[in-house]
Amino acid sequence: DAMVIQNPRYQVTQFGKPVTLSCSQTLNHNVMYWYQQKSSQAPKLLFHYYDKDFNNEADTPDNFQSRRPNTSFCFLDIRSPGLGDAAMYLCATSRGGPVQGPEQYFGPGTRLTVT
Amino acid sequence: AQSVTQLGSHVSVSEGALVLLRCNYSSSVPPYLFWYVQYPNQGLQLLLKYTSAATLVKGINGFEAEFKKSETSFHLTKPSAHMSDAAEYFCAVSDGPDSSYKLIFGSGTRLLVRP
Image (tube, rainbow over all chains, first blue to last red; front, side, top):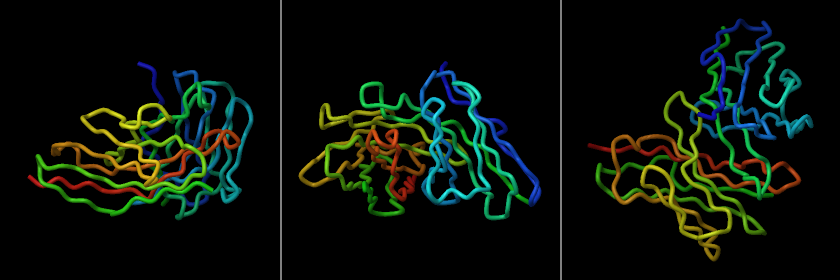
């Protein structure tokens, strides 16, 4: 089945130690998104790629970076995780347009713990 | 800018009772609207979408929603609640083409189903 895959599902890192979360998709969608979701809150968009074009949200901290080496994969790098970065990180994809389909499809998420 | 309001952070119903989760949006143009469901420690799953076709939209798991332009509402309903419906529900509106159809989420409603 076509899907959005996130690895790992659970990640523990130390304060200040760089960490990378990965997302892959078999849907061949143009757009990939990264969200941060804290407990009992709605997902908050960090950035997205439309094909190779990177779009950063204005309030995304510089500590968060992303890479999309090809259509299928996208990575979230947290350069120096702080305790406040502990959250669920969600990857999503979409075709990216009204004709192609504006709905987003989400992966299962990676829960990040910072110790 | 688009916005979404979900009335009621928690809704409690008895098993077999009607489920009604409220969502109001602000948009100056016909929007794309979505309902997502999130189970604990999982990603978001698309329940249904409105993309300017029929105003009554049927989704998965017996849910449906009605787009009412005059009320700027897109409430989610299910005739008979099941225990497995207990989850967090998010209403979302899709932003326009200039921002790759980013999703703007409501704050979420946690549905509790009593036996």
